[in-house]
Image (tube, rainbow over all chains, first blue to last red; front, side, top):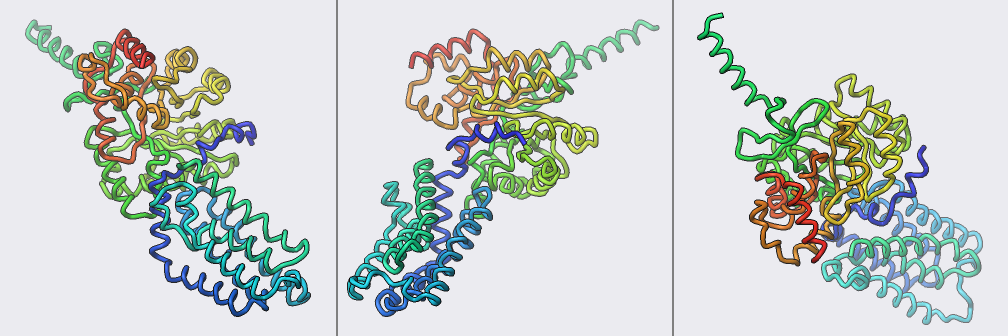
Length: 199
Length: 310
């Protein structure tokens, strides 16, 4: 194994996709799955409004969201043009498993998934709605200034990561919440680096 | 011998010498029977290949998007129509090999291409699998040229490529690097091993190899492929904003891509340059450099000076 050559690679070498292809992939992803994306967002919104007392259900929804992201977005969509799409999808799928574990832990220890008692239900509902709305923003278009990327909202990495970080802090307490934060933060960083390299 | 028979044989020998591309009468370049496709000789075998090929890094990595696949097929069509044959790709380039294979199959161009790809894996055993996968993606029975990409695990892969060559699965083997990386290691391998091709970066603003790898390749009779002739696109974008040299017509070049490419392929050590593009119009511009004539050294220096003063 020639380890030396690994350090030769720079951002240039990782940017194997042109902006044209990146945008075309997102448009195709949105056109194919627009209905499913809206279903997910409505599901989250409904839970925030009606089921805020049952954060276990929210954790299961987030688990489903990350599983979808891993398979459909990373593996099937981005995986067409990036190397190791399967490996990256596997890493993203770990987040789904974390939410499943949190949901299970919440069933075993209900207080685990309650935020501080001083927060009222109305406040948590309001914050939850705010997070979902924030997740719907076309962040890639905002960050890059590229209008063509305004089509890539919804079940992409940035919206999903933002919603996850927001919900975890809203509905979890103690050090357990930090289990669910690193991967979303890393994925946000990865996307920002990718967008920087592309644009 | 009768005089008449002697004169007849002399005439035939003369015609044969003029037609033979390997003849000392012709130099390293020869013109195709069709109007002016510039070709250079692969020194080991004397095979002639056009001086402009096609790279596929990023440009052909379009995944399964049908609209883009068809558009890249048109780019390949323009390349082949202009007389190009050498196509360079790699498993590192995402879906590029697959898209090239799609385009070649759709155009029925399997016999028309000089297929060059690479092995890019640190795992010795995986090299064989990667070779077979590449063949499957390109839709070809074998490759003309197989290279070790960026010197990754080159010691083990080189012996694998030598075996492939003996079996006739490839005709040539080589090594590649880019961006000016690892030139010392590269030169050492060129000196110690029997290579058919080397590939590295060289262009109007990156001439590091002029005093190292290029003369070494010439001395060792190794064919040279030049990647990043436009500096990844940045060089040509900057040049296009500047006026052409007033004497560009003397060089038989109509635009900056032709000038930049002619500068490169006119170096006596260079065999072929492989610019990459995703647009038909740009491909036609690039392929302008496969026609006309090569530049003399004083013309190359004049062009270099002009660009330096821009």
